[in-house]
Image 1 (tube, rainbow, N blue to C red):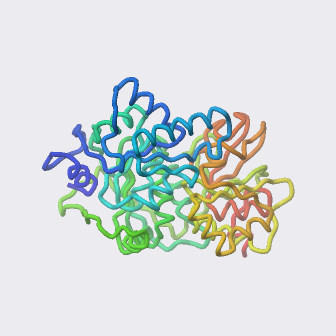
Image 2: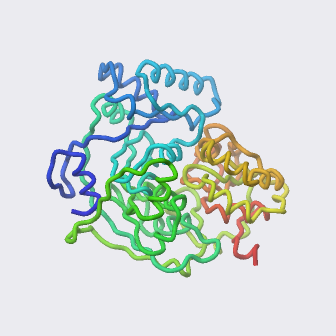
Image 3: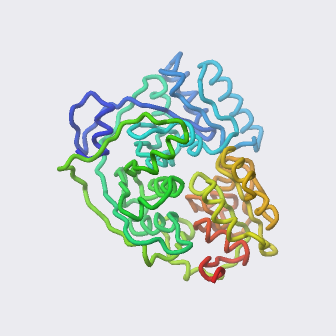
Length: 417
């Protein structure tokens, strides 16, 4: 078996499994956020007629999409979640402390775990060698009650990345390139396994970016084999105990893809699909109205540091808005202590409360008719951040920072020559 099959098998009563099998799997954690939890609560109580969750230490609630409350409906949803958490005596409830996926990585995820979340970007946790996937509110409600769920064992695709990372080219550029090649349906219900020396050269933050966007090609799981960087991250988080799972010698993959990033240019995903991807040269000079640095894709300290280095001592262009939102309170505090927040404020940026912010359009940063947004988020669907007559472009933190200075889409390699 390959590592995907072995981790899934370890959560079943099966000795061996293979792609296409339907298996019942036990779960290490079940997560829901304020965009999804209330529907799951209704199903749990009114349709399943359940009284107690299977384990109050493994059911996790996060309030991040509409935090701080952006409407009466949002406030009511938050109160419903708080009441449910109290009734069930849930051990982990994150009430406005950051994006759910960032918090899960900071506090909970370990290699070899199997986790589901009522959010499509739960696949982020593959950056630490866990299997994690998004599911709907009905599945999540069943998992709250039973502690297990059924899954089909997916085929696995190995993506080997070689070469040396060019200056100001980041993991975001690589994953956009891969999604553009695979298309939005090209990895449907498959596991994308990232490996190779160029992946090993990435820190956990950038590995999270790779894993986070696997769903945009339709993937069930993302996975990166744990190594010394994983170990260092987990030790720093106080999580030193975890299994080491590796491929069998005769493990099989559906197919293998290879990428050499030595000559990769910054990439842009243009409206209105994530697989509409092109080299930045095709979009250079396109005027912008708003820029956003943040989200579970690129709101970590390392992302903020890359952008701040470009913006240090400079001002954003007149007529544009620049929103910066740390992915969690921990990221915010670190950025504050190191001076990054001061750099952003001095250049003219607005700092947001840790959470989903302008990625989802549930709180601030809403676009008006005809406006253009350049964002480090993971989706550019029509109307996702306000008006359906606006345009959303996806890019890396380096591209967003360089573009904030000029007011138009700008290659950071040119502005810093």
